[in-house]
Image (cartoon, rainbow, N blue to C red; front, top):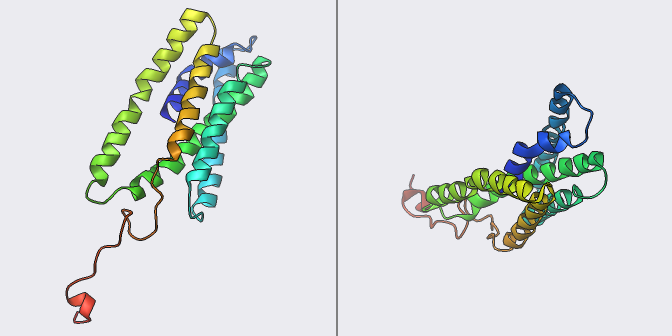
Length: 190
């Protein structure tokens, strides 16, 4: 998710400039379209999935949208590529809003802080790796297609990783088994 999110954020103006004939102001306006669409989609999806018993299928769909969007951006006209990148950005941002509640509810409370810190730290490496590799592939091949294919592959791998996310059973805030009830409250002596 972070690979695609950071690469799109960093490289979006360059991808829009490939359309040609646009002023810097127009490039800036067009660069605002994917984030605005992402905000609308994240709000809509979160309202819908908050009632869902399992968010994993929705996370997989968002990641597939990200993979398909980055792949389709390599086909067709630059305007078609812009629309595809918009869908990829929506998929990446929606995937993040679906992932974090699952990550925190799937961890035992004893390790939740350390686990979330580890996931966040590893994920933030995408902020360096993705734009760097994308730029390297662009400089090496002379095209953004290699970087977009890399982002598609990363999203497909993330879809496979969704199967390993532990499903929250709804038994306790940290997942797993509910804590035993002991003491005066359990016996009604409160």
